[in-house]
Image 1 (cartoon, one colour):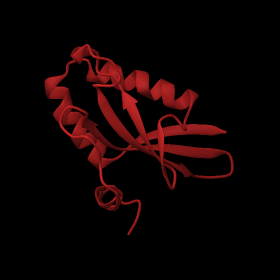
Image 2 (tube, helix red, strand yellow):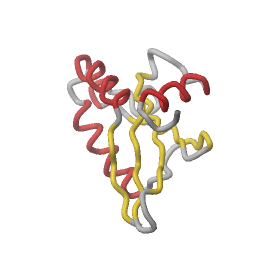
Image 3 (tube, one colour):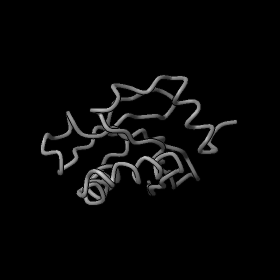
Length: 114
């Protein structure tokens, strides 16, 4: 199975905000991308193909537990190809979780659901 990674609008917006505070974020995201390509189902299963993945932010120096959370969605493109969609990122120190209602809104904004 071939996997590709695609960043969506809400994710890009969150990265832009976090990158202002954490200079290591781009390198941390590159590491996360490699981890996801090796293990696409990484993280906590939220149902419906959604996963919440813990990501360390090197600039914080506290590891994955206090780092960021990335919401991913695995979508089937064709029989041989799947996409790992990066839909949302947030700093764990700013918020504890994302509600189901917020997840639905994020997927709507990103054009995944109507």
